[in-house]
Amino acid sequence: MRDVTASPTQDGAAPGRIKFADVNGDKKITVDDRTIIGSPHPDFTSSLDLGFRWRNFDLAGTIFGSFGNDIFDRQKEFYVFRNFSTNVRADLLTDSWTPTHQDAKYPRLDNADNYSHAISSFYVEDGSYVRMRNLQLGYNLPATMSRWLSASRVYVQAENLFTFTGYDGLDPSLPALNTGGAAGDIRDQFRGIDQGSYPSSKTFSIGVVTSF
Image (cartoon, rainbow, N blue to C red; front, side, top):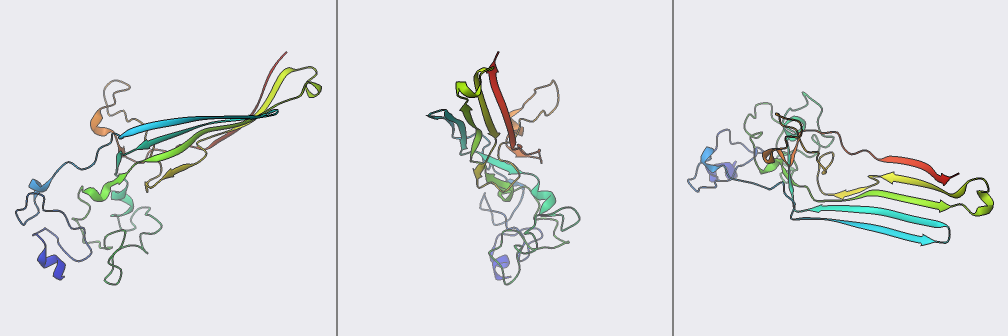
């Protein structure tokens, strides 16, 4: 409670609720404290193509990375602030603020809290990630094994095999949103907003490449 009374005036202030920054320094939290937070644009992106051959085996893959962009995880409004009236994160009960657990991941569970869910940096997370987009292992069959099929090759392939990221949502690789108007209308203000899009699926396949 001492921290609440020592902080700038804020509607609904109480222990365990989100504390907003006094951006303009007038000792009270109002709409004048709104500011730009985060950017959906990465500082840089990169990819690395890999290739390796050994005897009749070959291995190829593509690794892609995006670094320095931020994601506004709108899903937090549902799985953090709905207090079990909808599906919630598995750790919401164990990692929410309590008087004995003040360094918590989430604010206090409180049905009367109509303030903490306001748009803030709580929703913004680092969207950097590195992903193995494609990995393929192939084997060129010896002539003795492909007598009737020349230059035969069998392979196994995996797409989106693994992703390294600190982002807490379903998938840091967000699809471009169609926000209205003509198809393909991808306006910049909707970039980097996670509205619960279906995550990229892992895909496994096998194949044969040959000629007759």
